[in-house]
Length: 492
Image 1 (cartoon, rainbow, N blue to C red):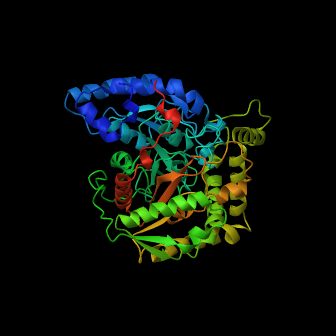
Image 2: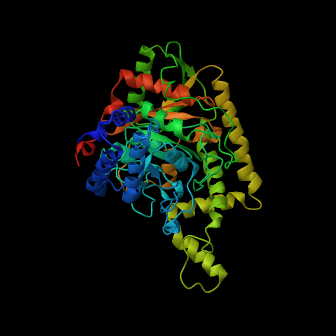
């Protein structure tokens, strides 16, 4: 079959169960596509051909023995921030270019237990710091919709592999929008779960109080299948919540749109820099949801102007602390012929980290330094609580909150965005991480250059099932999620 890559996760699962094709045939199909198409997209850092085929054969054996799960034998791509035993885990950095993980992240282990087949590790902004995937040591990944544009970041590789049909779905991490923004830029569905819903064990840390793993796929239904695997309590992660996990697939139609109150923040639609085409597509999608029975309610989110400065104090401060372990001593990049221990530290870090990572380490170290800790970091944490309370007050009036995922569509590769301009592009996503809330991005159309636009829906705590259900029903009434870039139409 030449069109296996066009099947949804449900269709793949049913095809495997009906013996229309084997996991090995499916895996070989994707590996051939990767070999042919990925040199143009540059989404994979490591392709695990032998591992994938061995896992596919094991999955086929389980299916013959009657021991298969719904996802047994289905390929997946992992962001290169998830530790994978025996496979390079680089976090997109020269610092970890030689790091072979001795263990699996919980998310990876859960995938293996469910029978998923690992196709490889995909590119990302270095240590998840960036919004374009251009800060990677391995070079920029390209957007399958327009190869001269970025796929977003930091999970740009995860978005690109799915948008180019080089994997059926992928894992990503979201610290300030790093699942949702690339999903928007690449015309995909991406879910950032409630903080603590998915284990962070084995994820290379950027900002520990903000990082959260989640699924990226073409549709809410496909995301729900992966959420059924990766959502769980994990005793190895002290921030993992011991809360019952819902069956996200079974609940896809559980939320009724009739009477669903969707909050429309006045401040979000008056942000400077909001592209007219993005605003128009988002408003059209909200009108469609209204036609399907939802009620639009205007709300105030008065802390909007505080999002960017608060995030860009807290996240770099945590990054400064987390990345202090990379000193050239135990593992990772080590400078050659150091004169003394101080020279080893200085050159290992200056040579091993890229410009954006160094910038954020410096910002974070400054914010945590004596004399500035109270003035900057402590104050930012207090404002963070006010942002959370602002959302909770809004949820007294509405069920979900709607916003653009990003103020623009994908940037051109090499666009001369200064760091502050890039940071302001996160205005709609970072508050969700500061508050620990769940949010989802779904494709809702295109701009004048045929670049995808995303709608973001933000939910109250633990409402992942509701968010998936709302988007699923929207996707039953529209076909934006089924649109494919020209490069995805190529057959291997």
